[in-house]
Structure formats: structure tokens, C-alpha cells
Image: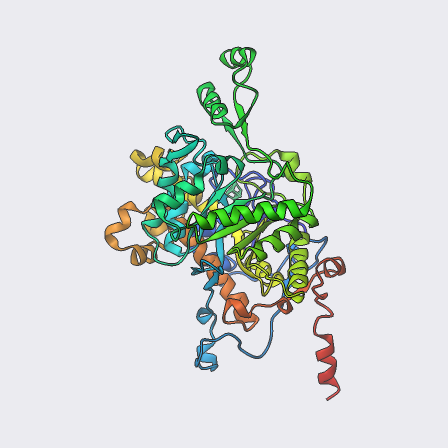
Length: 546
Ligand code: SF4
């Protein structure tokens, strides 16, 4: 399928080149619009429909499917039935509207987590954008009632954090991130804190267990991500910070302790440093060693009192995928996130994003296959969260259906950051005194926003819904980025409800692989989802022969 830069029907266009997800390959925090996610962050569910009602007709440009990707899956629709209605509810058409579809979900064996929608953020770690726009992401997620993931290295790179005897004893940035979310947490959603090699060395899990208790925060063991198969990177623009990070045990490139590097930096030849994390499991070459080391790690976390433990793996090949499913299952983890190539939220090397690893659809199709094998052998299959290039409601439905019944929630990285950027830019114009705090980039309202109104109440379709959820007195404390997040969630929720109503599934756990069709034979071969023109053909013939 060709991804166009402009969508005439929705009145949206991409600032840059669209990726498979529909987002630009380079998404900028100062963007003045206006892709579908950007506009939905203002207008919510309005963006489900063609513009200019009453003056237009519209038709899809997504009928011919080329290649194997989530865009080559189609969603079924049925002309009868209703499944998954609440116990005792009537299946009368009056009761089976799309608004009645429940999109609530839950995951977890040891520490069950409920969410009002089947979405969670990607890992928002030590990258600058995650730090700058955290308030918007955290408050937005908490208000909507979905989980948020604090990514790796947040403690290690925090210049205010303090180590004593080789372990973290003071971590203000991590505290800020957890507490901002918790202020509006109402029992739906959760905070997950990732630990990688350096976080484990710095004893971040011990800090979390002692400070927050084992029940409040989940720990996510990080094996990898979709964007790259080396550890996380950030860019550092000061020599002092680069030297501090090296002392903290990170790899910093180029080495800021070298005299020639210092000289180059002082004279402007080198303008920044890259901080890298380490690879995991370098000392192992056999599955059995990894298996016993992984068990030791999980047992240790549980001894610390941490109840919720999850695993995130990346776009590694099939061997690593099988390991992740097997080990997450046998250690009774609460969730396994499987991230396909190639998006990232920080500074992953570009050609690594382009060229490494298994693309999302291929990886997720295999994840289902392996989970099924494990289950048939009597093994324990963990709850799954698929990630990698999801931005829209059709993506959420497809990811849940492809991995059903194991897939419980969908992890979305770059898309869920856009409302944080956009809301902060708007807030910076209305409240210049808060521009720096929230990371606003604009001095004036661009026409794309000004055309929608002259006040936040007019611009954000969900303003009064947020006010109802948070309370009028809280509104001065709610970042505009969180209101924008609410709007995007509203659009995704209504869109998902509509797809579910069309498949007659009134609750998430009724979504199944049968609800998908492959748009071409190649996708059918790779996913085992029948070609859309042949799915249910047998049933059709039975009817004709009756
Ligand atoms: S918000 Fe990001 S993805 Fe959307 S148009 Fe702007 S740069 Fe592109």
C-alpha cells in the first residue's frame, strides 16, 4: 500500500515523509501539523470521519494491498450476532451500539493490571523528549487510565541522583516521573520502570522496592527494542555531563577523558557526545545459561518484594523470540512486550532502524505461532503486548486480533508522544511563563491551530471531559499536553469501538484471529490469516447447499 503524504478525506497531511505507521519518519516536537495523530490530539473522535460533511462523498485508497505489513491485513465485519456483552445484558439492537462496546482490558498473573483502553506507552526513558514532555504523558495516561513505561537509564543520567556504596539512594527524576503519574492514578493503568544492564548495576529495582513498596510499581526487564539491537543512546551537549556519565559507568563516545577530545570539544570540532548502554547476556552462549540467569533475576526481584515483573524484547530473530515467550511464561511474568523493527523515540542509528531486525507483522505472527506451540505442550504463555509502528485504531484492533487470545494490550511509542508535543506548544503560547517548563516551541499560534478556535476550551474537543474527570479545581494543574492525550485516546477508543461493533465483539477478550483477513496471498502465507477473498468460503458454500 502506498502511504500518501496528504489525506484529502481527513484533511490531514504529513510534515515529513510518512512511515508505515502513518507518522513521519522524523516527528518533530515543534511540528505545526497536521498528520492524523496531530489533528486527533486536538479534535478527538471528529477525525474518524471525512471532512466537510454535506458537501462531499469519499472513498478508500487502501483497497489494493502490496507487501507484507499490518497495512496488508483487513478487518472482518459480520452481519449478525453479538458476543461479549456483559453478563445478563440484552442483545437487543438498542443495547448493541458501538458506544456500548467495552474496550477495558487487563493483564498480569502475579500483579494484575487493569486499563480503560488496550494501549500503553513505549518506554520513555532517559531521552530528552521523554524528560521534557513527561508531565503531559504521565498526566494524560493517568487520566485516561492506561499504563506508562519509564524507560531505561533515567536514574543513571540524572545529575541530581546520588549513589552510595555502588547503589542509588536518591533519584529525583525517577521520583518525579512516578509521582506525576500517581497524582491522577485511580486504579486503572500502572507505572512500569525498566531496568537494563546499567540500571541493574545501579540497583534501581532495590530503590523502587524500598521507596514505593513492591505493589505500586512494576519492573520491566529490558532485553531490547525495535529501533536497534544495541543498548540505548542519548546525545549529550556538555563536556561535564559527558564526563559525569562516563564516571557513572556508561560508555561515552568519543571518550570525554581524552585530552584531544576535550580540545576538540572546546574548539567546536566536536559538538556532542553519544552515551551508550551495554549489551546484555554477553557472557552466555547457551539457552540453559540464559534460562537460569533470567530465573535468578526474576527470583531476586520477587525477593525484593516486587510483585509485578514484565519483559520487553525487541526485533531479534526467532530464537530470541522463543526464549522471551518461554522464559516470560515459565517465570510467570505479568506481560511480555514484543517490539518489531524499526521506530524509536530517541537517537537510534538511522540505518539500524532501516535495516536491522524482524518487521512487526512477521515478528508478531511468529509470536502467536510460538505461543500456541507452547500452550499445546502444556506450557505457560504470558500475556502479550505487541509494539512497533502502531498509531491508529485499526492498528490496535489488528495487533489484538493477530495475537489473540494472548495479546491483551498494544504498546504505542511515537504516536502517543505527539499530543504531549502539541499540547505543550499550545500551552507555551497561552501561558508564556510555562513555556520552558512544558517544553513549548512556539511563540505564536500557527494557522493550523488558530483556525480551530481562540481558547484552549475551543481548540481541545475533550476539554470539558477532562475537567469532569480531573475536577474543575485541578484544571490549572493539568498540562495541555495531557488534554491533547485525552483527545487522541478518545479518537482511538471510539474508532476501536466501531471496528469491534462491526465484528460483533463487545469486549476485548472476544476479539479473535478470525476477525482478520489478509489483503494478499503473501500476507496470508506469512501470518496464516486467510486471504480476505477466501476466508469463510466453506461456510458460504454450506449455506448455498442448504
Ligand atoms: S506531528 Fe510528527 S508525525 Fe505528525 S505531521 Fe508533525 S512531524 Fe509528522
